Length: 416
Image 1 (cartoon, rainbow, N blue to C red):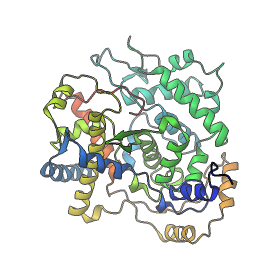
Image 2 (cartoon, helix red, strand yellow):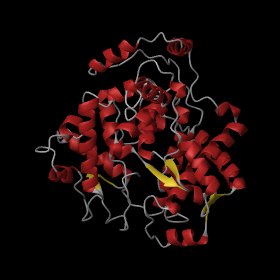
Image 3 (spheres, one colour):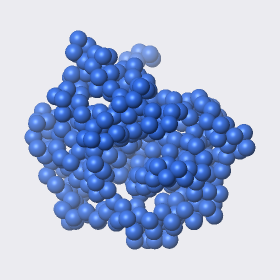
């Protein structure tokens, strides 16, 4: 082997340390580095800070509200437009949804902004995406099929424009970028994963962190990274929310079973920082606050934007820790039965034959790709995912009532 060639054993060890490559890897070894990077940014931030008393106060308020509303993974499927089925087609839908889950904000009034008419209602923001996909499927457009995305003579820009046709004069932002994301993901899935995202789930071997790493390693449009103070910073908003949506939709079972789900952080966008500021947790420097209140754009990857996103991730982590400290009963999101414990012991002891994974990859049409190993799931606990979902929903409620204390920051990008 020459000096210029990579050592295959070293590469294999590196992939294993990241939780990539399928087989019987221990799901607890994979790390995304998102939380670690967020803490680094927070520790070195100048224009975004946290107010500890307000963080503790917010933690108690959030916990009480989540308990009162019985907020759990079940809340995900209660939304009108989210898929109600629990099968392979649902996985395809969620992958497509989060592949395109970015940049819906508008400077126009509510009645003039981009919107989708569907089921007798007008949908804006994130829900306009979900409505557009559901409408396309109703019209027999295979919009959630990766192989279809690669057919340039059929899947054209005009067709995608039709899928996202608006009920107003404003068109969906970044249409070209959305087309590019679909094409790129389609080619990668067809080339490396037999044309289905299910094989990515199989390769991750029940690990949320491994699946995040697999997505960001193989799909450039999920590689939400930047630099801060000369250091690489991983934020991975859409990759993480994809895992969270699978987990919530399938209620932690089947295609949504991840044994390290608590390694997923909050999803760094523009709504959660807005809500954390509303709660008094986030504080901005006068120049940044004026910039946001004047609704001036903040470039993607700029110091201000990275501080906003990363500090929000760290803030939600502190809120989660405070809830756990004050309410020990919130620690366990899942209470595994003996079946799960035996299954995990077998996995950790190497009894899971890697050939089973390969066999599953060849049989992607089966209804369930593994036996259910969680017989009873309790969703009374709390993690960063549920806190994020709750804060997002609460911020949208305040927006509808016109009770926003500050506008959200304006950054136009494919990352969120």
